[in-house]
Length: 342
Ligand code: SF4
Image (tube, rainbow, N blue to C red; front, side, top):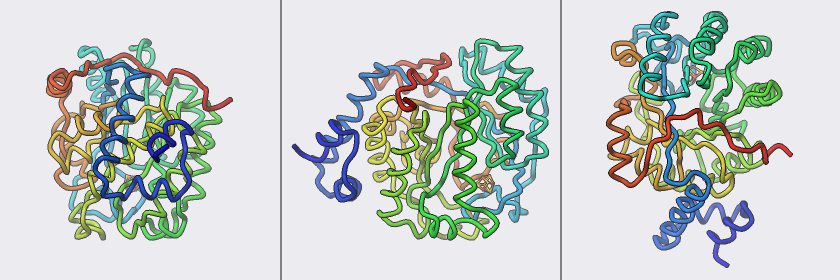
């Protein structure tokens, strides 16, 4: 049995096997990895790709992560926070397009995030058929609880790297991996469908770091896994570092699909920002979610997590997916079973 078959059968591999799948120059093995990942996604989702409307709520952040264009020390951008009216307009437009998940994403700002409690409740009242996903960073447990109580269904909090010494090279000392993982456990305890993930090719990353990420994901078993390549932003301390590899990102999509067959795995914008047709390539490597952008255009231009960020348009994505033989599924698309938590 080769490594790909072993991963399909056991949903896991020893570290050496993972290392081989991540770095091997054997094209036949890589092609088989992608094929098995596609087949596994098809077994669970058919040819359907879930669509989530991305609304970039705010680029105001209290943190100073060295890789991020909206870090608090970047004075080259104009800060914004979408008003309640703007958020509802974005949701309305997405809802008209048939999309039944709204993703509110923004920098870490506990004071302003408090105002989202009422807004989430309003969205759920106005669109009871829709899910709300939040991605707002590390917040106090009481605020997570209030957002959940208001009706938020899912929460994405990327761990970025599962190795504490690597985490310390990417973040200022007031931030810790320990705290991030505690937040993830808290979110799960509150009943959120929870997402985690990492940057691929971030500065100082080694294959061992990625293997540790896979181990963490495999043991936490999140309902969603969000990962994309590191892409430099010129006004950050890592502005001159090279971008992560698209091929490595695609292999990780495939490995994670085979480890967690039912997880929601978005083909992320960062991937589309470094290779043409990145979202289709991501789907063909096992991803099953795409997040078109519904942020008002003028605001979205200030949401510069990294340079050359692409903007995914729902109607364009739909056409491209259809041409590639897929169909969009704009329904809520909740995680199907809780098999991971038995
Ligand atoms: S990565 Fe997140 S927490 Fe860090 S500076 Fe950027 S928005 Fe803030």
